[in-house]
Image (cartoon, rainbow over all chains, first blue to last red; front, side, top):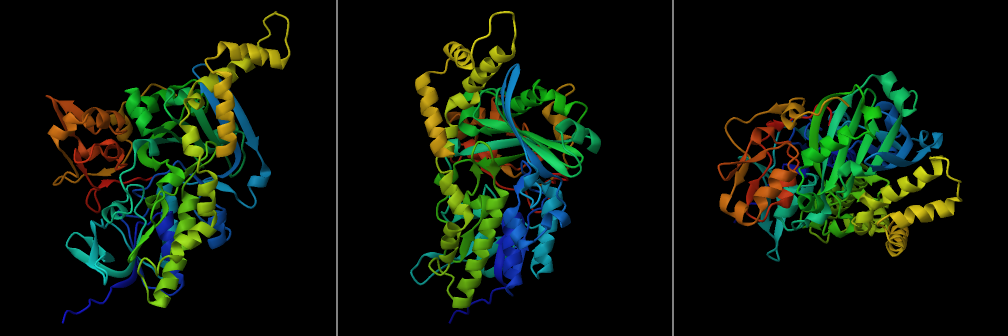
Length: 438
Length: 95
């Protein structure tokens, strides 16, 4: 007779980012015994994000979180800019309606994630930092298919009824059990980022914000030297988060290095007025899943769920870049599904199917579907070069009063258009694709 | 913005706990060359971990920021890359 080992915990959550910490919080609150395993010495020390968290879903879990959590600024101004080598055309939206209730905040993950993990601990989850999970523990189930029964870290085994893989975009756990095939490189991008210190007052003056208000700039065009992707510039309390996101297939094709493109971005005349005098205090990088809906595959197997970036849950709509809010949404859906499965005594793939259902019913998959066509649209090359040139050309002719007689805007646009490599057919096609995708 | 910084200068602003005993990166030189992985990983790595020395690709694993970009572009088998042991590697103070 073989003896069935008693699990050490009901649930082992691997990764104390937003998805893992919120899932652990929710499950511990429901009375489950939860271990939250984190590779970094402290939560957040391995984590890096562009920095904008769309906070409405977190506000439902922790009402008024922005008053309590170490968030940087409340984003009340969104600026989207097309850059050419020597000009910038932008859309600048600011609204006080974005501040209360709080819509989006900037965060620095090494400061924010410990707070969120602390919430899980307060609810009774056991935080185990500084531990790298190497593999899943599996056993053959009644049908012969492997069932996840825990995790292995070095020589230590930890058994759990359910494992929640919140181990990030490179999720080795999801891959090891066949839930995430190797991604094509047009689905992946690298985000290269620096945090640059500036005095609080300088930030507020320079970005047109006051108090705890903040600005988020999204930049496309020459900032990436035409490589698919874009730049970002976000305000923190006393620093800026500044970086580029570069689609890997395009980066490899360009023959340039990611470091070179990042440096070009920092040196761009369009950025200089914002960065003047700022001192770099940290440099880092993170892979970004850009495949959207196409990347989301199976999210559950026997004894295991996959959440957050590990499940490919990120959206780049062109105007907004989202990950953390989807991570939190998926963490909540997973937690509720685990509670339900354990109550029913069935942690098979079928028993955990409530996760997928909840995910589909929530904003997470609804938004993933809404923006399902965005990645393909954003692969269209006009976005990163010719359109910015065209817009800049039109505005140049509108504003440059050089003594020649003025013409109506339509004629000015037509003239600029005739000089541009953009064809009408391409513009109409991309425009229509854009409307459908975004 | 002032003068451009080199990658090592930028990385000097980031905190690392170096694992002196164990590299978390191993390279299959033959596969790396035959699949073009060598050029790709040298170009994409934001930390400049990879370089070519005497016709071989070498990895300065101590500077790795653990983003996984190299693994995403590498041909299957050309690179063995996992995270550093618990407690080692990059340690962001900002993130």
